[in-house]
Image (cartoon, rainbow, N blue to C red; front, side, top):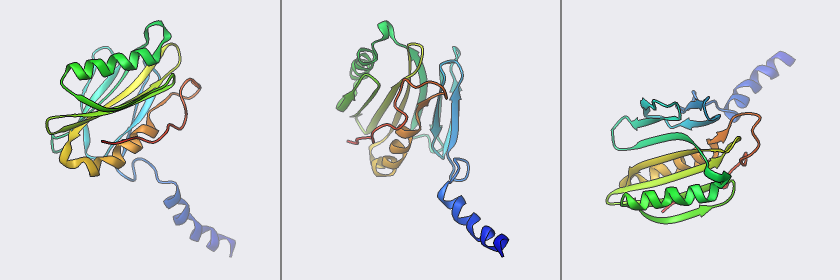
Amino acid sequence: MILRYALLLIPGLCAAFPTSAADGWSSYSNPRFGYSAEVPPGFTLEQESDNGDGASFRSDDGRARLFLFGTSIEDNDFAAEARQRIGWNKGEGWEITYDKVTSGWASYSGSRAADILYVRGVVLCDGSAAYFQLEYPRDALKAFNSVVSRMVTSLRPAEGCNQAPRTAPGAAQN
């Protein structure tokens, strides 16, 4: 009798705790900087960086790109480093319409022509940070809202590093 009830509960438990592979998401971990993030379904590895700081992924339809990378922070000032990145993106023609920078995490987004940019960074241990940068077509904004939200919560330091927030505030969209 107990076995029958246990067997009835298993499907419900599996639905409550889905795994990344089951819903098409995959995991990316970077041993050099000690961070991980989830990669959305329909994105395939395009290239791993030569210096081991991250990787780039492209959507199967070729319309979106995802960059995951780690970096060292100068003078242990994450906020200044994040603001510098915002400046670099502006220099590349992105109009930044949202930015929130704290000492532990940063998020910003904007647009350029028909594309949307979303960037998220978190502080890691040992004076470093991890980022994801997602570029996707403006006409897919609604489809990417949930992708961005999930990526924001999945970008995290390796176990044992408590520098960055474990649960990050939700993502803002254009």
